[in-house]
Length: 319
Image 1: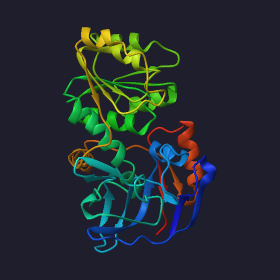
Image 2: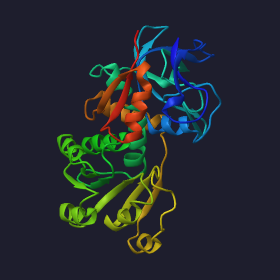
Image 3: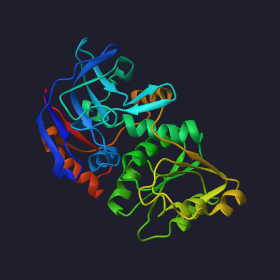
Image 4: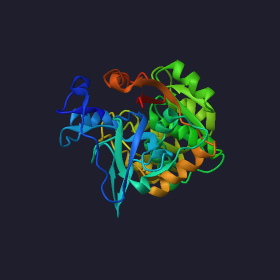
């Protein structure tokens, strides 16, 4: 089969479009002939060696295609549960940036009728991550306000779709006015350019008392403001720290405002199925940014690394 593999850690130049052995399904696994796969920041980190994985390795967590043994169109849940531990397709095993992948039978779900392969490949990892943060952890409720930093990213666009499906209100940030305009089209109730405007002032103007929930994945650059704008008794769900993991703690804000901080990563089978139901029912829709042929994975990586996207970058895989 054709696949995108890395043989060493590094930049986009280490990606190779090459022949690789067809996967052989183990007991309990099924073979999926992929039609589309998407990129996540996880792919960039693994490519760079953060963490370094055994090589050669096929990247890619998300995928949709045809189940070989039944001919059914399916989408893959990239989180594989081992008791309390979750391993991820493309990180702990070969992934979906290939013509074929073998995954546990319990990790494939019928392709929602309303979705193309490209749309289906765009939702699993980011939607189950966002669902766990907003629903399982923070318990976001109807009419509550949520702050979403950096609306171009996959988790933030998924969180916006889930928040609106739950009847919540969202204020989103970006340094791009074009992305903010697109966010309003996707249902954002308020927007603010975090490079040119005062986020705290914008939150106060939109919400009065502050947001109920913050989706925090930026870290050092945003943490102080996140603590400032969340209302007393509010919640912050943290799934990453792309600008640095060690901001000043601001502990006085946490106890004085009686805040709850949730750590969250990936999602369980229940989280995936909750997100899947929202997407399959049409209540929430994945956002596809741009589609590249599998052979042009390097250009796809470069677009994601530059932060030029709004939504998910997808690889189309020929049959």
